[in-house]
Amino acid sequence: MLKIFNSINNKKEKFISIRKNKVNIYVCGVTVYDTCHIGHGRTFISFDMIIRYLIYLGYKINYVRNITDIDDKIINKSYKKKISIKKLTKNNILKMKKDFKNLNLLNPNKEPLVTNNIQNIIKLIIKLLKNNNAYISYNGDVLFSIKTYKQYGYFFKKKEYNNINNLDNKIDFVLWKKSNINEPGWLSPWGIGRPGWHIECSAIYNKYLGTKIDIHGGGQDLVFPHNENEIAQSQCAFKNNIINYWMHIGMLMIDNEKMSKSKKNDFKIKKMLNNYNNEIIRCFLLSRHYRKPLIYKNNSLIKYTNILRFMYKSLQNTNPNVKTLLGKTFKKRFFEAMNDDFNISESYSVLLSLSKEINILKKKQSSKVHNFAARLRQLGKILGLLNNNPDIFLKKIIKKPLQTKNKKKFYYKYIYKINKIRNYYRTNKNWKIADKMKNKLIKLNLKIEDNINNTILYKK
Ligand SMILES: [Zn+2]
Image (cartoon, rainbow, N blue to C red; front, top):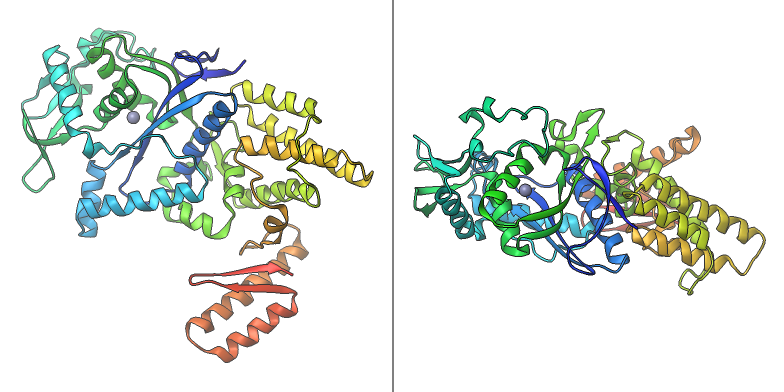
């Protein structure tokens, strides 16, 4: 029986879907003022793992994730870059989709844009105004009046908001923002304006999933005020609105600093994918329990390269495509771990023990080796791992130093440096020196594949 930690009740609960064998999931998506970094990667790979597991359990999934394509950050960025909002968001959406595809994320069933849902948002605000849960402020904005919703703050900040009488209008939040002449806007009963941030999620999940939602998720940083405000809006506007389980993904930290404050450019998904196979990035981003913060260290990706290499090595020279009934104890342990609110470290340890077992069987030249390899691949695939052909995966050399051991580190650094020099002379069309460097690499027993933007080196 699957148990999920429900952040609204602060405890693990049995997962029971509203409809038999069907799960409705809504996840707060990306604000596309920039391209995606691995902080986004962690949130959406975690939900990808959760969804893959639910699919494996036999549920039919209806997964909706919005795209915030109008927001003050987007407006500011378009001024700064001197390009239109449309062009900026269109570019970033294309890049986001490409990054997510390259990370092997399952596509949501629907991925609605906020700007395609303005009328739904306006309708929802009209409803809230009619119910007296909202008011038009002195400056023309429409605000949600939190004192009209007695349970406000109850869900995620119970202690702080216990005494509703202490609240004043200061934390009333914007539903509709009046636009200045030079700002983008849509015609509404309150003049030209644009939606506030929180209202979009209530309007979008209501339109695409109705009032009965199994799982609502997002990053940990969205709990308050964003998700709290969503609840307030939805409870006041829709009758019988149900969201059964709230799931929040812990933040990705760089040297204990929140990802959002770090130098994001160094941690763009695209940049990471240039240097590492997507499964290495996935393996790292899933490596700590999804609710806990994950700390990125210099050697994080090297560590998970080595872990995956160990698993792929055990798959080498086996036929993992056979049907298997063996390795049931491993399967049982794996499912127990996953059913316990996706206990990933235990799932990883099952995969590693299984790899060790395969290596032992190989030494014994046992015919069971193929069945255990098939079990390893089956369980790995549930997490979105071990999808590659082991020979191809192991052949690829990552363009950065791989090993932490000094001797090998020196060796890879040396290769990396020669390749860098070669590329410099290639771009400057100095073929003589470039060829000299090429010969050095060939002497080191490496195969060279030149692409338009980069060079991939393989061990021969
Ligand atoms: Zn949201």
